[in-house]
Amino acid sequence: MLRRPARQRLGSPSLVLAVSSTTFTLAVLSTSVVNIALPSIRRDLGGGVAGLQWVSNGYTLMLASLLLTMGALCDQRGARRVMLAGLGLFFAGAVAAAAAPSLQVLVCAQLLKGAGGAALIPASLALLSHGYRNQREQAHAVAFVSGLSAIAVAAGPVIAGFVIGAVSWRVIFAIDIIGVLAIAYPVLRHLPETPLGSARHLDLPGQVCAIVCLAALTFGCIRGGQAGWGSVQTVGPLALAAVSGLLFLAVERRGDAPMLPPILLKIRAFNVASACAGLVNFAFYGEVFVLSLYFQEIRGLSPLDTGWVFIALPTSAGISSILAGRLAGRSGARLPGVLGCAIGAGAMLILATIDAQTPYPVIIGGLILMGLGPGLAVPALTAGLVIGVPRPQAGVASATFTASRQVGGLLGVAVLGTLVASGDFIGRMQVTMLLACGALALASVLALLLVSGRKSSGQHQTGASASAAGAGQPGS
Image (cartoon, rainbow, N blue to C red; front, side, top):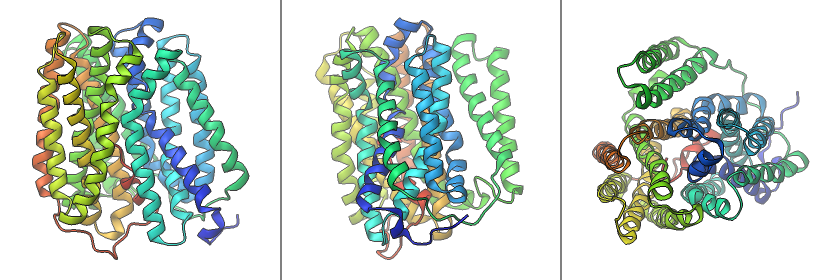
């Protein structure tokens, strides 16, 4: 097979940017857009909160589990091939979801879509990294994709609210189908393959352990709200998650090409940034899930009205993400990281006071802070990772950082969603807000350990997985 050595042969930079940004946005938008549709889905297909948690988490589970392996495949097989395969999986999942006759089929469709999304994210960033001739242009392109994806994820509930209110929840999956077809044409006709890297073995044992661990952990957390935390149906999956997690660590220590190189766990910047980002995602995604149920089932809002209320999130996140870059450039990653997580904790304290009669200005004020905090924190955490991780480990650290954010969101929906699955919804929702507040407060304290200095102008990340850290979302 011929290898194309020159980046400039990949295609027009503007075309590469258009394809990469659209593909990345489509993949990350699916992590949040379905939440607003959950009450409508339950009315049409039946099921309880546990089933809705799987609809929301099915996509994220596969995304988090397969992200690193798909990144390695981009290097080994070429980003264009991986993108086309991802588009195929994403398309098949969207078609199945749009026509799903039952909740079970919808969950399976989300799993399939998640596998496709896991391929699309690293493939889009790989195309981006090879589509520009110098690192300065590449950095600007990544910044554009980062900002667009940040706004897209926060805007997901808003977009879904408008679409569901006007037509049906099934249309959000029809939009995915249209998006795939629009992306596939320029990829097939105008983009050649990216240069192939050195062949290396995929970490299949590690991949299997990772999927089993995350799936069992998610199942155990969701089941705990139904059968009780002491039941065999809950303890069994949680024990399986613990065993498979330990096996994963053992495999990674001994493997020739581990998904998670053990050396990363010795780097403070990696541990701090990944832990903080996971905690931020835990709070953000978990509470978007809970608040979607609150607005539609407790306050009686339509999906369209719920979308209008949620519009505070993308607006405030977009503003704070711009401020985050400036603050990080002037004072380093520590200040915006600590401040953003603290603002998020304050937002959860405000939202912990709401009930069925709380005035909407109070709720919207909490949502504004809920968007401002993560929008400020995530770019800072990304900068802290980039500054503190040695260049040889920057790529895999960035990809793992992205995966850790998705794991945080996965657990947020599983744990916080379980707490409101039965009993007094308002009282349990307030408990979830306090837990989210605690998670963000802990993230704020941990962010004090970030490197405070600014990154030197000559230091750059390279490669698709390095760029992945920069393409963050407000709650991730």
